[in-house]
Image 1 (cartoon, rainbow over the protein chains, first blue to last red):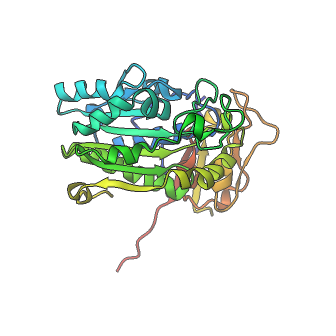
Image 2 (cartoon, helix red, strand yellow; image 1 turned 120 degrees about the vertical axis):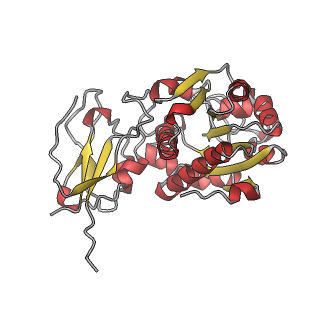
Image 3 (cartoon, rainbow over the protein chains, first blue to last red; image 1 turned 90 degrees about the vertical axis):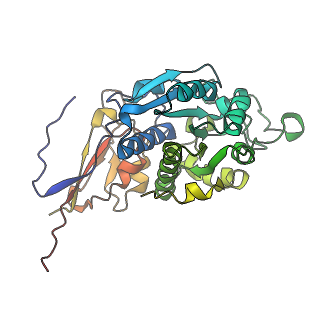
Length: 263
Length: 78
């Protein structure tokens, strides 16, 4: 439905639809931070002017249909294999900007090996890793990143660390590799953190454009449907309970990345 | 005269209410009785005159519902 609105002549646009996003409706639940992150990535692509040479690699998970929402080239990878596929794309097309968008089931469970080895090889890739501590698409089962004691459909008594282990600190692990140049953990849970997350994503893309090495931005997110909360309550809950387990910050930033001017 | 203005793409809205929480002047609310094409209660502006054009709503919206306008800043001539 298109609506014609008369905008007064003395008004200027402060915010409008990003060019790198298609004008389609997303399939996400109401209040899902995937939508916020798609928007942030599209804004970064717009601001860096790389829409025509950007290639994304889609994961398996809730964001499996991400290729429909972006107005950039996309390929769909097998579950967890996005870094492997992105490696091939980047090595054959070094002038393209390649990014993977992965959830916690994709990157911290089935695709851990691919992610660690891509980082260790220092592939010129950018990964946006969305961590919401649960398997959202399949109905809220325990993920490797589920918090100790957290109730999910497959751990109805709460995650027992004696039985199911501890949350996987993916960013800390990746920061140990020599090939990674920028590993950070941010959250998209309130306005200031969304602004910071956008800056981190931009820095990660710029690190790739400067041919420095592997960059990854982990973003703490929510799953209000499977956590059985309202969208805003889930964001408050995540800030209170996820941040102590997954501390925010830059785990690795080389001097070259630090020198990048991110505005 | 309002400093800012938002245009809402009603049919994109899923009624999650995040914008209602972050609006600093509290002029957003979910329509109590109206539905959009997808069957959600979409967001609406109660008093557009109070809008400052800060774009907080647009920055948190997961579905890119908002287009935000603000009055051009007129530079005083030196």
